[in-house]
Length: 393
Ligand SMILES: *Cc1c(COP(=O)(O)O)cnc(C)c1O
Image (cartoon, rainbow, N blue to C red; front, side, top):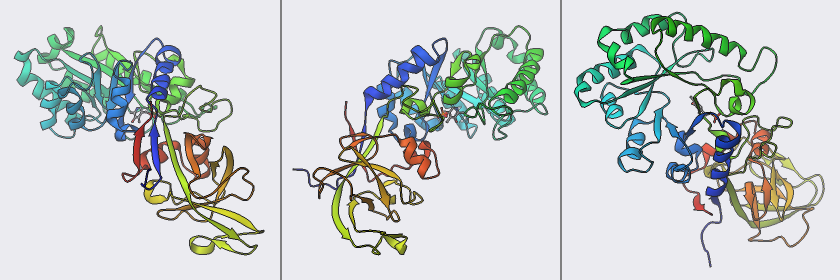
């Protein structure tokens, strides 16, 4: 007997591996890929993701230096797997750590250049390699160098002290950017403007360092699926690894269309049943009023579990392999759903699938996100600590 509160998040290692192999063997088969495992692997658990992808991914992308060090020092990944810090280092101190642990650091500002190059100079006798991914701002306007400041920033690297190291690939350079609208393949959207900007910045780099070998890393999941011309040396899939579509429910581009399989399933059970008369209300604020007699199920899942309170009445969920709808406001610990037309036996203890591929049925997380006015990324990252986690295969 299981007496625990019935909400559980189930994680499929096999589906994660399936999605990663699709990236490797189909979507971006001519590139290497960094599995993006930031934000605790989009809520799936960093160690779970790393273990599943240990023999598939060419590298891992994340944010925290201490997290990257942990992967290296505990040998949680293979020695030949790369690690990249997507925001680079946050202080001079971390420069030593990234060099010691063979971690690639994004460099988006002059300060990061200085911290890393100074440390590299101090360490040169150790024959360490400094790998940096220079972040170019091609239109997102968050991180990176622009036409205005790139040439100046490169002067630090053009110092004659580093000429030999660059030539011998003791300092290895990747040019990197991130697209703002790779999921919108429309005229005047997509990546066309960003690519023009990238090429102009690349020219500045080539003029400063003629004949220097370097790599390129541009594509997120959306660009991996839609723009093979920008795959280059490395790609950076995130959301597609976790089985959701970077295009949400866009026509012909859903997770099912792309053959992506859900990695996270959120499942709970019905813990109470209510029979309503026409005119009765449900939940806080009495925002839902029954138009007819109804049977309502109360599910042990609320916003303190990560099911967003902004999710409106009418959001799909699965009971007995049938799709039904939430009714009323989401509470902290519960939500209500319409059981009026659900066939078969339904009562206390009946399983409910909130999203994913559960015993109560399958429901793409992208559908729930769409109803909630958000994206699957936010739902995944919102999964609360108090929800039990189970790895199912
Ligand atoms: C999060 C992130 C990604 C992954 O994006 P997805 O849309 O999840 O594929 C790639 N690159 C950078 C810089 C990111 O921050």
